[in-house]
Length: 400
Image 1 (spheres, rainbow, N blue to C red):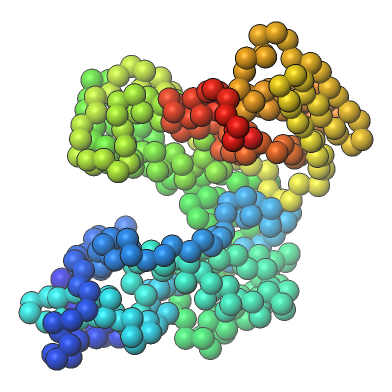
Image 2 (image 1 turned 180 degrees about the horizontal axis):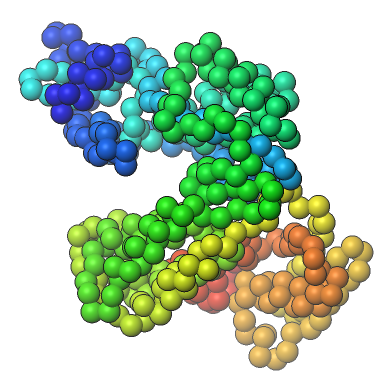
């Protein structure tokens, strides 16, 4: 702890609070956690402060955006920033909220700390502003917190753009983490835990990520009891992989439904034990197979689009694709169904009707029912017991 405090002082990330101000301000717990590379990361426990902070929405880079941005035969350069959040200063009047005490001395952060709810949004917006001039010059860059990806259509262009970005970083005072950066252009690189290959135009989970999932799943054996925290870690690995594995979220649902029957709650006691049953093992069956974990999407922006619009009422359904209509009436057994279920069935029947014309295309389905949109985009619902009731329960005036 003493070494970390000295390191933060040397980096000018923190400062000593004047003695006359030491009794005021907001103090949080301070501790250190080990890094994967063997180092230590200081953490200011700001959970209490975060309850009083307004969380503002913002958009971060998604895997789907990376997939659409990569072009055939692209060359990649990856850049990792050192002490990412420490590049952003805190307003003097706000430093008093970021204090901690160690060995009778009071300290306060001068820069963005890890653990503050607003840190990811603030840093992302600052980086977007810093990269804006480069993007105007035609340099293709993607950024996720401190992980950046440069894309170029030739090796020579990748070198040129890399040098421009590095010079820009130096001018702004941003520090490069040379150990984690890959500055030599490659056509196959690892970024955000995924392997991107522009020659085959395929994306895959990295071998390390696959190994971590297989190791976590192997620990789940019948009759053994695991803590809620261990199941949360497993779900986290599966969720991170599901944005690359086709229908990954769908294959997560059986485990989530099983956990729900066991009283699982993310906000509950993290050390409560849950005994593994055979049904739990069946829910994890696909996640034990290396071939399943090695699947990935085809890279590049989709070039063949088809839009399909659907709608439903309590008496029938209708759909339109490229000016061609389709329609039908509900049978007597459907007349008691909730409108949300009818809307979902309308989408299914429309897809089935136009299937010969949809093969080989990317299909955008438009429906005015938000419940159906959520279920399709999220490949089902994580908590079957109550979500099913909300989707198919009794009709209400506000159901649509």
